[in-house]
Image (cartoon, rainbow, N blue to C red; front, side, top):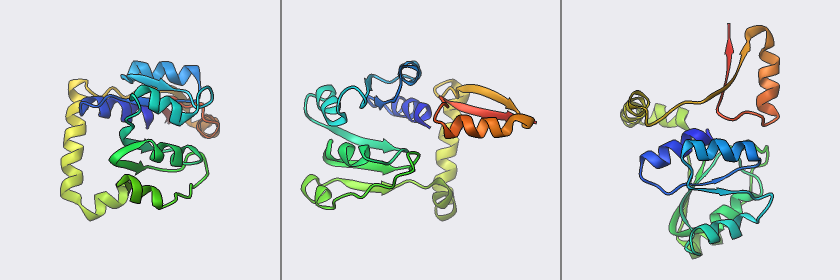
Length: 173
């Protein structure tokens, strides 16, 4: 999801800061178009964001991971910034102090494609048309990192669960 988010951000004209957990993921993020790589294991996330933005903070945070970095990222938003809650790959659902939204005027927005598709099918279809157009013209370039046979599907699940995946992991029949 991170690679797709980087490519979509770039397609929308954003300067993209990508937070990664390994050198391998940093290379993949740069290849996808990230402008700045943040390594919270090397530099505290807020310090990295402040340095990359001249202390201004970010407009949007795309967070598929959750965990302890979510609050730090929300604290690093500009006035009227947005935290997009995509999921909790870390396994930890963060607790966010609501006073942050009061003093920063920011928003926490849940992004759940399945529900959006059901509740707003016309908007969802329009978004899909844009995304498919970007795939067709090469703006979005899906990355398949690894392919497993159906007999090795358990290994594919382990690969993803162990956070080894960079891009898509495909199981073929």
